[in-house]
Each structure stands twice: as C-alpha cells, then as structure tokens.
Length: 149
Length: 167
Ligand code: SF4
Ligand code: SF4
Ligand code: SF4
Image 1 (spheres, each protein chain N blue to C red):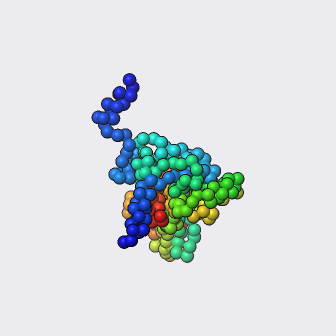
Image 2: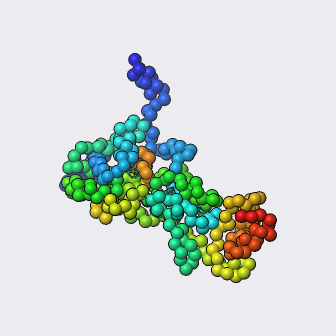
Image 3: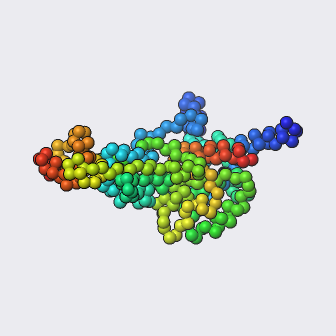
C-alpha cells in the first residue's frame, strides 16, 4: 500500500465516524420533523452516539433526511437546496410521504414520489416512523456512506 | 438542588439513553407496526380496501383469482383495516424494523391470491375465500369454514339454511 492509499484509508475511517446530517422539509405535516428532532435532541434516543450532528447549512451535509411529500409549492426550492449539498451524500427518505406520498398520495398538490426527482438511498417508512426506526435508517445510511467516500 | 437528585439517580440507574442500534430496543406492547395478512381467513369482502385512506391495499381480479396487494411503503399504520376486517385476516404486528435500501422499495409488499376453484356443490367457478362470520350463531367451526370455502355463494346459503341459521 502506497503512502497516499494509507492516508486516504485513514481519512476515510476518520470521516465515517462523524457524518453531518441536514434535514429538508419538503412539505411535511411536521410529524416526521418532530420525530427527527426527537431523535437528535432527546437523550433517550441521541443519534449523536453514531457520530452524527445536525448542521444548519446544506454545504456541510453528508447525510440528508427528507421529510414530506414534495408539495408543488416547495418543489423547486427543495431541488435547489439539494443541489447545493456536496457529493458524496446519502439521502434518507423519512416517513411514507417522500417514499410514496403516503396519506397525500395522488393529490394534485404533491409531487411524490421524491425519488423521481432526487436520488434516494434509504427509505424509513412510518407515519411518522418512531425515533428508533429513524436511527436504524441513519445507521444504514452511514454504512452506504462508508462505501461512497 | 434538583440536579443532585438527577445526578444520583443517573449514577444508580445508568444512562437513560436506550442502546439501540447496538442492542435491541424496547417496543411498546400496543405498538402499531407492520400489517400482517392471513390468506386463509380472508373472506374477500374488500372492506379493508374501502377504508384504507392512502390506498395501501388493493384487490385485482386476475385469471387465477382475487389478488390481494398491500404496500407497506404507503401505509400510515392507522389500524382501520384491522378494525373493519370481519375475520382476523388482517392484523397489525409490533414490528417497526422497516428501514430498507431503496432497491427493496417495491419488495416491501404483501402479494397473495385467493384462487378460483370449482364449487363442490354445483361445480360453478367460485373464489376459495373464507365464509363471512358476521351474524352466524353458533360460530363456524374450523371444519365448517373449510367446507364453506369450497362452495359458491348460492351453495353457501343453502348449507347455512340447512344448518339452521340466517346470515
Ligand atoms: S409520513 Fe406522516 S407524519 Fe410524516 S410528514 Fe407524512 S403525513 Fe406527516
Ligand atoms: S393500517 Fe391504515 S393505512 Fe395501513 S393498510 Fe390498514 S387501513 Fe391502510
Ligand atoms: S376479510 Fe379482512 S382482509 Fe379480507 S377483504 Fe375482508 S377486510 Fe380485507
């Protein structure tokens, strides 16, 4: 193994321990957002044990959590913000809304499914999913992210 | 002084963080999770399809029979289907481990077929669904259910009349 490879390998092992999470609300009813906040902020769940941290800017993000059915009104903004997130990124669809439209499925006002517009990697179904399920999804996302960087 | 109380409690009881995903997580007893389907008990009444708001349940007529399809990825776990099912064919389990890679998106479904058979009474083509238990007293025995399953609606009515009940 050359020196360069060793350094890359070391950097990768370090990086995978601290993915930053960015949350996009694509018109969610707020149920999934509350669960996402719970997952991060309540000591009982504490997603930071996986090394994750929520960040305020899309440019810092590694893992993107998308909630909501991509309403017609928010669609362009979501796509613009998503384009600002640097690669490699892993996208997690939280709740049935982004996956299929859920309760808003086939409404004229939503553009679900989100994966028609963005590359989604992990789905976490539920309405809303419980915090442990979101942690499970984030853990799967970290495993995918490890492959990508 | 409140923090001292919390400090002592944490020392005694350990951290309040649940160890998931490094250890199994506690699941409440009445957790509303993944829907289960028991083909043997389904009467084919399609009540579940009617009450499911996000359209997670769909029935299609196919040459083989009545196909039941249920997509976990659009179910909102409201429990209406379980509530309105006249038999216990559809039920909610407490399984919430449903996070999956996007490739399995359409695999997260139940697909089963209630097949067509020839009625053992008159030979007509009919669905091998379970009989509707609503209003039947005394309730069907398992043998009677199997017997009714192989009959067409008209022969079922006749068998019920001979049994001495009105349904
Ligand atoms: S999945 Fe359910 S809880 Fe989450 S945003 Fe959609 S409707 Fe709200
Ligand atoms: S629990 Fe509700 S949303 Fe899910 S299949 Fe049953 S009726 Fe449909
Ligand atoms: S018996 Fe239950 S599962 Fe079958 S169609 Fe009727 S409501 Fe649905």
